[in-house]
Length: 344
Image (cartoon, rainbow, N blue to C red):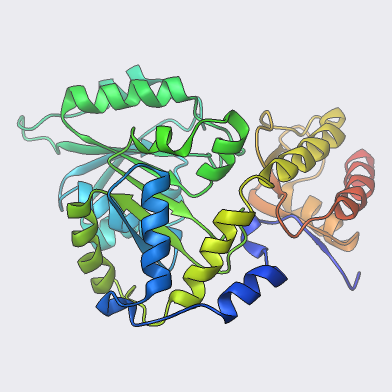
């Protein structure tokens, strides 16, 4: 087996750069549960301003940030609408129901290609002995939708749908930075469309830990209580917040490089009929339905060649470019993957 691997499994595998480690080592810290960590306070203020909201809250993970936001918007026993492949109902281990008592209903998985009219038709008002809908959640970019970017026009229409129904709109913005770079939509433009957002620092931006909940001052004050209840209160978290601030300053614009690398991978595998979606950002979804290899077999063969990929389903695999993948790494993957896929 190879000693060194090209790791295309996820952008969560990034490691802090030298500059980020220096920022962490020199961070000014305090007790964040008391609200006394200056580095955390600065990060929260900076992210809130980026999205045009009043406040933000630093949380240990994207899942916790999402679940805090959902509890702010949906009372126990009420309903959240989202798509069937949404992270909040696919990869968060039933947290909305377990922690928030939230009922979820989904529209068919279509990635970023959401039809606002379909969503509008699903909303249930108060009364009629039905579970009332309180919020809609969308994912930008869409993970299981191959890194697809929801168009700004669609999001504006969804905002109109939510306003018409008197319900809230949440954005799982774990990779919203990629959407910002891909479509050049200002972050503040995204921010004004949502009641709450969660944004992640530990994927494409390369920080080791952390996400933030973004919203009004009143919502974030309540979010602090929910975070503490969920075990997310941190003490000298400024060491982590400093990594996030460094990532915001240094690693947003470079996401375009990851998008270009993903496009190279997509072009290389396209002749073998395995590309499931158009590549817009740093995720390349592989549909192996018509290939002789299934996802596990492809992953095993790639690993033997020194390339790590994700298995998302029996016939679905994924490649992800990120801060830790160099041009040389892409060249190595471009040699290995076509050879594997072309084998009889």
